[in-house]
Length: 162
Image (cartoon, rainbow, N blue to C red):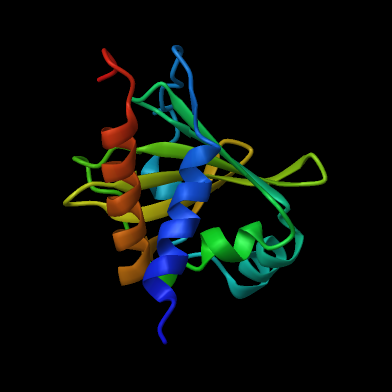
């Protein structure tokens, strides 16, 4: 018996149950230039470090009064499984970030990332000290995850929220 659809529903419900609405959404900082990050994508050592150490992820959506929090030892596996090894060579001018994620270990910020998700843009840009370091595309599963998440957010928004 395949439990994948049921597991996906449970994960989405868990994630959205930790969502919080915030009437002061954060706006992206556009002062950093796109040419600063490596066109090779995130390196294996940095990626493995995040997988091994991250125990909390905060996500704040730029244009929605919403934030999400994920806690637990395996939180990085749940989140980073959607990052492919395919690098983003340049951030297209028509792409704007959907959300900012903060990857923490025991309260210390290890890395931040801007999540880009729209029809034209499906990737994540890792940031350290407000400098864009690496960009990687999402896997097919990652694109499906964000599509479902956005549909869930749209369906659960309180009256009057854009």
